[in-house]
Image 1 (tube, one colour):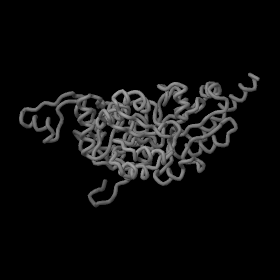
Image 2: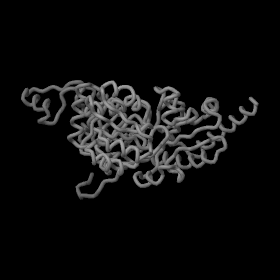
Image 3: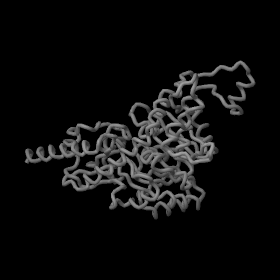
Image 4: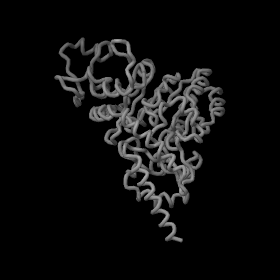
Length: 404
């Protein structure tokens, strides 16, 4: 995105201004919430031209909406895409995108360590449609390349992953996919367009759960897909017929939240790095998963393709699920909830958040220990968050001693 002087506009400015001016009315400084489900036309020929896409306009809320379109333009500009379309939820964005392009007999390659809902699509729903799914060890680029070279329609990636924050080399994976003519889809929810723009590495489609960092206030559901105009139009057509449409009030709340995305991410990322170092040295923590740590297996790749290392981390606790069960309720500055990316810190084990749909055996097979705690760092002061963690750890020590 460039201005009239052909100067590149920075992401923080795009987050505030992109997709806004065209949709304001009556001199308002904010995009209105248009709740109308239908739009009236006196000229029937004009109505028809809008309905078939020859002219710009709206005919029915399941298809398009002015407030929703403003949101789509903002995420499109932030990802540097030709086009974007939206959905009622992040999972709708994922499932609709896959369903648009996959047909019986196709093959898809992905990783073990994707969000639990995504994993269920791969393990339960797609095989039902006679689609061959091959899930590889996350981070094993050689295995993924080997499976891609056997042929596939789609290579589906998530980086960083939810919840173990593993990293995949986008440029390398795109090269492998191009050899066999496969499309590459990337879930960019954890990184956000502020920290990572997969289209720059040749990725075909970027997917977001807008519910998370984009909205940032845990009050609106939504999803988005960004990419070339040709691919996005195909997905839009599938979505407008199948009906997973974003609500205009959600679009308004997401637009509001995205204006502070750059500021929120800076605070969350800086705090996450500080907290990751603190946890790394704690006697009650087995392991810390954060790509900003230099001993993280994906640190060098993350440093090359991400601008910051993200506001998400996870850690496994000594003492297993019993320790997690005692520890989490003692945190004062963290919501124990199945969400992430909010201004408030949010915490929870994989068994009740990212992979609640999976059995303990399935989580173990995916490399997710039951003692793993997902920690979404909010915009609170990091010293207060660390003091909160320390108090909970101290209380856990006392509980352990009393049980002995």
